[in-house]
Length: 61
Image 1 (cartoon, rainbow, N blue to C red):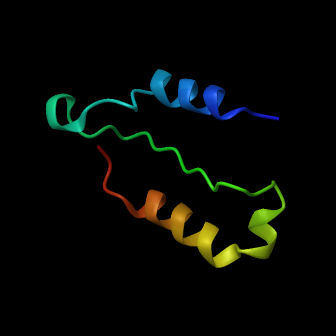
Image 2: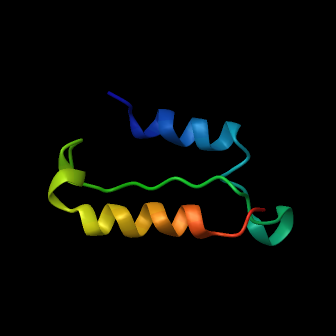
C-alpha cells in the first residue's frame, strides 16, 4: 500500500509540487482518485484513460 504522503513525496522528488508561477510548471504530475481502491480502474476505465492520455499527450516540459 502506498500512502498519499509517500506519493506526494515521490512527486516532490521528481520536481513537482512547486509554485508554477515562480518556478515554472513541472513535468511531473500526480493523479489521486479519492475513495477508490486498486480495482477502481477496472470499473471506471474511461476516467482512468482520460487522466492517463492527458498526461501522455501533454507537451514535454
